[in-house]
Length: 331
Image (cartoon, rainbow, N blue to C red; front, side, top):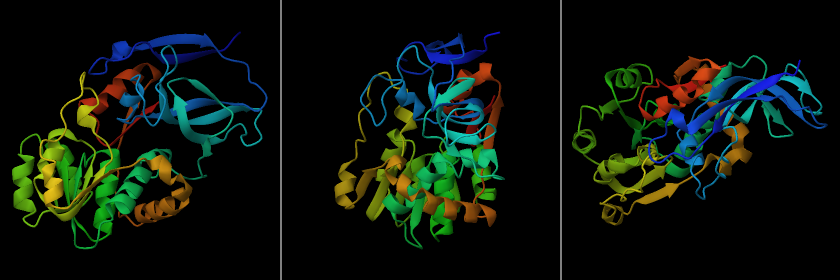
């Protein structure tokens, strides 16, 4: 009997908010294994807001997902068959994969170290943790005693960035939505203060909490949140642009911040970055992250959904704020 491979394909490109209608479920015969290839069965998928940008046919840091092809996504899989010298059946691997039950790879997977929790390697010690590490420390360059503000602070990247700032001796203020997320940030992540954007005015609260201004802003949101922080910067502030989830589903580009003149007034810098530029230093970052987690200095949460059929719905949770921590799906 021919074994089949279920896949969620990108059926059409979203116009505005992404929806389940942008994807199509298909079942295809499993491809024969070629020399130098390996086949793995997907075990976990991880979901990032940036994946929304991969669906658009625009120039970016990664090519768009082709129509009619499986949606690209990071994940973790278990090798079942291999004709590749680096992989053997039973190896647990992670890397860029797809919304498929089975994935093939010639090269590029990393092996999960024995004994390491899968959710840990996909969360604070995965791509989101590395993004937080290099974005905050290399781009933001916080100094002990400075005030650091993180938007999307309850998210997978923001929560790690905020806690690294705390570890480095900074006063840390998070911006998040909803009582549960804000409570987790103060009680578990041990931030100094949290602004609930759903019930508070960000600019006014920053004025109260940061009378001397914000020294480092790690931004995952953009839009009106970025504007609010621009009004509350300290002299020589550093603004780290990690993501702009508030704009990802806009049908038309929105006007940029209306108060960029504040960058001149405060002699601030704004810099975007991509974690791919720092991968030659991955081991350095992982050593720090693992040690901080072992010492109880970094708390993390995983939101694990279940079932291959629920992949699109799980992705959509990112854009409604439904996820509580790192969004994963176990197949």
